[in-house]
Length: 107
Image (cartoon, rainbow, N blue to C red; front, side):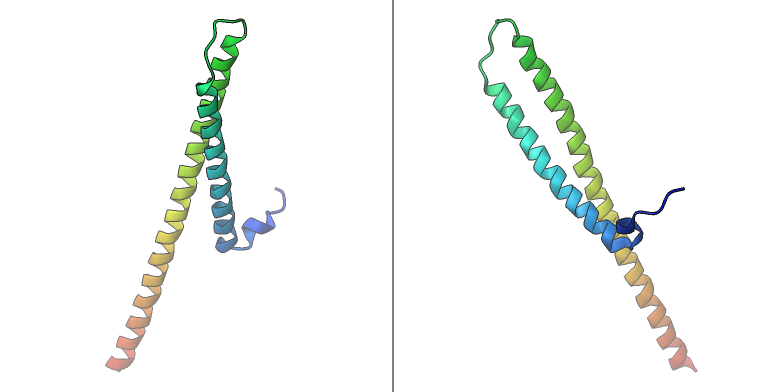
């Protein structure tokens, strides 16, 4: 196996930082694709040769846009899970502290 990626192996915070950065980039790219698609659709339709090229471009941009939407959604799920696990970990830590306090009080 290869060497682990330093940015990912450095800990969860680096990974979350990368996910946030990628999510922002995917969102910007999605917005760009939406604008491109709107511009293509505004172009007048002609029956000239090459008019099918516009339909091919619309299809290509639409497919790319769908993949970008999935990427943005998946990054949102990853960030939500990370927040959930952080909350669970803090609750677990608080419970341990409370149990220690109760044990000391009982003895």
